[in-house]
Image (cartoon, rainbow, N blue to C red; front, side, top):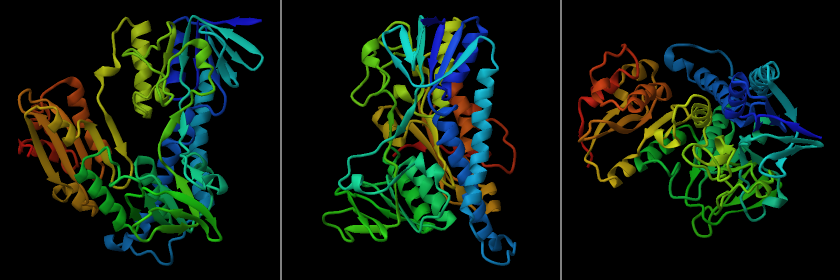
Amino acid sequence: MTEYFDAIVIGTGQAGPALAVRLAGSGHKTAIIERKRFGGTCVNVGCIPTKTLIASARAAWVARNAAAYGVAIDGTVRIEMSKVKARKDQVVAQSTNGVESWLRGTPNVTVIEGHASFESSRVVRVGDRQLTAPRIFINTGGRPTVPAIEGLAEIDYLTSSSMMEVDFLPEHLIVIGGSYIGLEFAQMYRRFGSRVTVVEMTPRLIAREDEEVSHAVKQILEGEGIGVRLNAQCLAVEKRAEGVAVHVSCEEEPRTIVGSHLLLAVGRVPNTDDLGLDRAGVATDARGFIIVDDHLATNVSGIWALGDVNGRGAFTHTSFNDYEIVAANLLDDDTRRVSDRFAVYALFTDPPLARAGMTEREARASGRPVLVGRRAMARVGRARERGETQGFMHVLVDGETQKILGAALLGIEADEAIHCIVDVMSAGAPYTAIRRAVHIHPTVSELIPTLLGELSPLS
């Protein structure tokens, strides 16, 4: 027997629960479906647990470096990974339980557990239940990519998801992938006490960033004892008595790196392959991402795709913004678009890299007259007080409109300081809105007005 709803939401990641609750509050009888863990990637195996682990790793780093601050710690700093994991699990449980309780306690929301797949553009099957609704929202997220590497099928390996179950300290962790996820894990486990080597196929780390940023991040990581091997174009792996051997080069020595454990951190793929999208007629691109328009609607009327599954952001904050866009257009008569937003994200190494808008490379290519302001973090009082002076601030401004085009902040508390720039960019205000503001002393963001007072043409 078919069950009738006004709306069906598939997946409980960042966008799904908020949308389901909003729809229900607007009088829509809503079903929300979850096949595994309430809260999706961010809550279970992404942002929340990784940043919890990073907090433990930083505590270890602070303890080891306490003497520089006049604090004596007698004895060796020991890492108890079982307790580190237990703390992480507790934080995760609070979030997942909170999402589930919120949904189950919301009137007009029916929570259904199981795997959902389309039977047609209006019918979804979950086990032996058949559901139908005129509006269906896909929020199924993504999973770690497992690349085609010679020998991989014959060895045990870890992904960013399975790393969440690790309760021991790898002797030597080899990370394949020198981008955001891989670098966070690399620094984290180095601070826990593992030897760590990062293997990257391209000529530099976090290749989407400007070269100066990539170089600075590499220096920071190498300064903590992390090995970095770039241009690893000849990848293969094999099992060894010590663990795993990674063949990284066909020419440059050493050609092989041997470690105890291997972590694959080479990107993510969307969870679209088992949804029956072909039966619904929903179009995907060559990588499996659902194609959506500026309002997040698919090519099939009445079906939308939000979050990582649509390839239009791949961050928790962009996923939540997807919910806001859909809700505004459907329920508030407020036209909001994906194209209204600009890139904003962070790499949560220590110190963090925070990014908004264009890179310098993109600004040059735009043909605009670009001004740039630069400051070394060593000139920031907060950084000197904390003894953490690595990094810099770069802000790009359109020389004609005076609007901020982009920023790269690498340094202590950069992930918070970036938001004064983000807010002004979002408001479409000129850079002088920050330049003339009075910021609290001593903070990191107080140097941004000073930086903006010393703009010069981008060379």
